[in-house]
Amino acid sequence: MTGTMLRRTLGNSTLELTSIGLGAWAIGGEWRFGWGPQDDAESIATIRAAVDQGINWIDTAAVYGVGHSEEVIGRALSEIPARDRPYVFTKCSLAWNDEEVVSHSLSPASIRREIEGSLRRLRTERIDLYQIHWPVWPSSPPGHDPGSIEDAWETLVALRREGKAAWIGVSNFDAAQLRQISAIERPTSLQPPYSLLRRDIEQEILPYCLEQRIGVIPYSPMQSGLLTGKMTRERIASLPEGDWRRNGKFFQEPMLSRAFAFVDRLREIGDRHGRTPGEVAIAWTLNNPAITAAIVGARRPDQLQGIIGAGSFRLTAGEAAMLE
Image 1: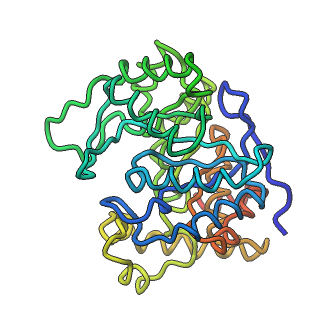
Image 2 (image 1 turned 90 degrees about the horizontal axis):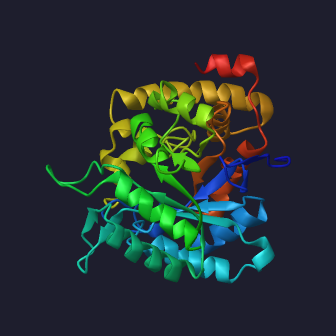
């Protein structure tokens, strides 16, 4: 029994979000930054199951599967009655050429091309939350100049006024960058990485967002599957060649042993409540008052069973302290 999923308003918007949303990175399938092979029918079944179980928002990006994640979501939503459709959030700034080589661009012309592509693939006339994916992309070649975040943000403000986006936000921005764009218009939201293993945003970013009423919807609350309780050294060693996690720093020592130590504590707390370690890890992120809701990835309907309970579960003060 999962209980009723809690809801919170996102920043300065009218969006009432369930405390967990479905992350759609993995359903993009195989590409340079993918999670290995993925079956589209299974992806659509996962989206349907998430909606049936009360999740009311999906987060994706144009670049996931170089357009494929958005296409699959568009197909899934076309089969769901309008009154039951979840909000759909997507992102811009990572574009690709005819050879599917991805590059980072903050230019107004590129962003306008990207939103038209996203609207077409998602089969919608307006995106519920449109976000700049990266201010600086870590995979860009040295010396690459994507353009300015101010120009990119002014473009999103214009797209909102034109009705192509209902609300606008950013992803992976630091506090200084949030201040820069807030001089133009305050963003509705920030999407940063946040988990028990990755807590740097607690220092400056979360306090700033709380003070400015910027909603925060973190990704990777289970650190890409590491904190689910299902990950083992053997499973990591057998991840498919196309899965980016094979080379991820959290999947190497010393972080790996640290993750497994956290899982032991997560399991101990979860066992008291009939919750999975993953649900406890998600609930820990939701415990921070600056966090509106968390993005939780799934690629099969059965995976939702180990995460959906986080939407109505809260840690006691003692349990939160146990994880500090």
